[in-house]
Image (cartoon, rainbow, N blue to C red; front, side, top):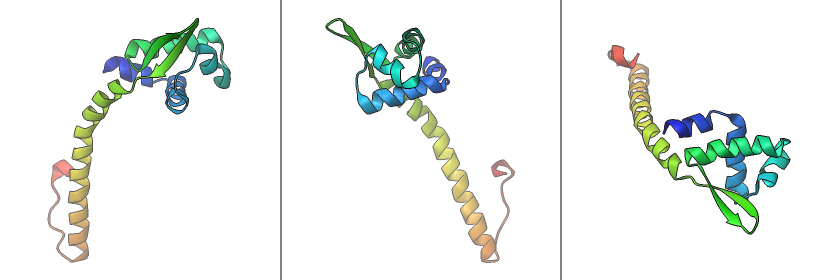
Length: 114
């Protein structure tokens, strides 16, 4: 998962992933052109994305086509889900506190929920 986060840390790589998601498999030139970057620059970014497992490469004749592989993002989503559940729990406690306060019965707030 660390290599996925490393790959996602760069805004250009996120743009490349978005582009691959919208347009399907693309060559290096097709990736580079709208981003106004050299073929070499696009290749470096794509190499990082391939290394992280977020992009697959396949041959189409003489061209190397790059396509999104979103499977590694499932692991990231599952990891983030544990925090989402905690945020929801805290928001629900805050809602109950506010609703109780409006009714005149706020009650104490746990220090942990700060």
